[in-house]
Structures are given as C-alpha cells and as structure tokens.
Image (cartoon, rainbow over all chains, first blue to last red; front, side, top):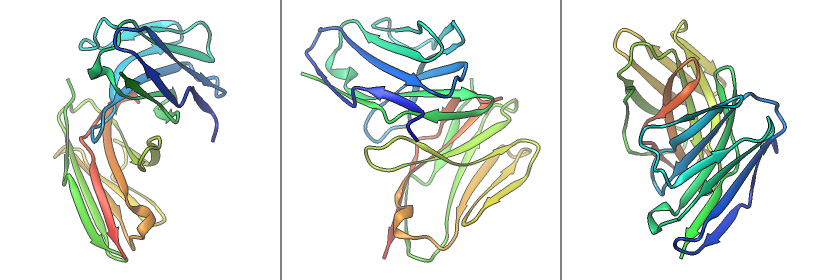
Length: 110
Length: 111
C-alpha cells in the first residue's frame, strides 16, 4: 500500500516559520493533488498538477505554494504558517478517474 | 461549481443491520462518483465507485446506486460489522478531475 508516500507523518512548526511537506509516488501517475483536511471536515483541494501543468484552486491562500520537480515528487510549501493552517495535509495521485491518497502529514503550528 | 450534500451527518446502527448514506450533487456534467472510508487518523480509502453510465454497482457487502435524473447517489452497507465504523465521504467529479466531497457521515456500528 506504500504507493503514495508522505513525509514527515507529523510536522511541528512555529507561527510564521516556513515549512515544506513532501509527497512521492511509485505509481507513475501524471496527476498529483494536495488536499487540506481539518478535523471533522472533508478534504479540501488546494491545487493539482497535470504533469507539469499547475492548477490552483481559486480559494487557496497565497501562503500555499507547490513544486513538482518530476513525476514522482511533489512538495507543498507553506510560506508563513498561521494557527489556522494546522491540519492534515493529504497528497493524492490519479490516473484516469481514481485517486489514491497518501497517509497524510499532520501539521501542528505553535 | 459542483456542490455535494451528504446525509446523515451521523448514523448509528446495530451490528448486522444495514446502513444507507445519501448524497446529492448539483452539476449534471459530473460523471464519476467515488465513496471513501476514513478511519481515525488514517487516509481516505476508496471503497467503491460508480460511473454515470451505470445505475448500480455491488461489491460484497457494499453497493452504490445512482439516479442521474434526480442527481443523487447512495451507499448501502449490509450486515454491518464493528470494523465498518468510520467516516464515509461521497464525492463527485467530471472524469475524476477535482473531486468535490460531501461533508462526511460518521458511521457507528454498535455490537
């Protein structure tokens, strides 16, 4: 089941201190997604890549950026985390219609 | 854009009973409807999906039905077991792009 890997599983950062979350996949899927999931809520799409084409959701804060250097890896950069950014961040890959989620990184902002 | 509503928000059933969760969607162009199960602290896992050219799909104890005209789809779990307890999310998309999730249903199976 380790086809979508996220590191670290838990990340603690300080208010305003940049943090990077990483995702890798062994599936060679051309689409990669980043979701934010807060407690007791549904996953919310932040952005996705179709190959190298970046697609940002209209309501994704400017504080969130992403990089995809190659097919296997995708990064989520939070430039100045606020307390409201504490959440689970889920990476997913897709080929065709089905999306496969990674285990997530739980971010804590102190 | 697409909007997905999911009901109920919580559902308690006795072990062995059936559970039904319902979702409605707004965009008639949506054609792919997956269901995810998420246990506490774990990733969402795809349990079943249905495409708009099919009215019903079954996989052992779980089934999904789709009514395109009414724009609603439902998850049916029969013979529920304690390990079915989790949060269930429905979603809708066009060709699998940009899943829009329902708010989730907390299912509790009491033994």
